[in-house]
Image (cartoon, helix red, strand yellow):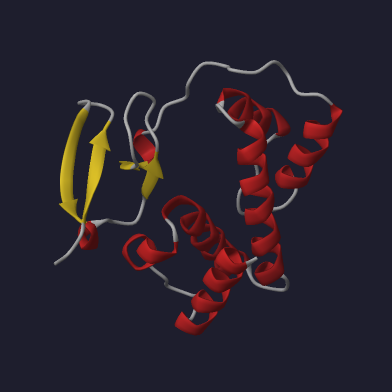
Length: 160
């Protein structure tokens, strides 16, 4: 039997159960305040919450600068963008840790690769972060990265 997952549509505030095999690229696991468990949301439908933290001090700023500089040409975002997002998160230290891990894995496999490959690699590592190993086959479609290389990236992400 195919397990089910719950989709959430923030625009209509509705929940729908679907077979796990019907998850599509661009879906992300999220935990909603006031609801137990995980639901799946289209990344483009996510909205920003209010600030939950004051501007960050030097230690967090240094870590955010590492993240900001990790995805040149692929995900060029300003320091302000990164701090803004982390300040809105309930647990910014955990999110910063996750992004540092994303940056580490990305950097390991991006060296010497063309921009288009690095863009797909970024999507792959982000999918690892957003959906977990068991659901990668449903939410990531490769055009450039071989199945063997995908397995290496996924293994490195989840085993390090």
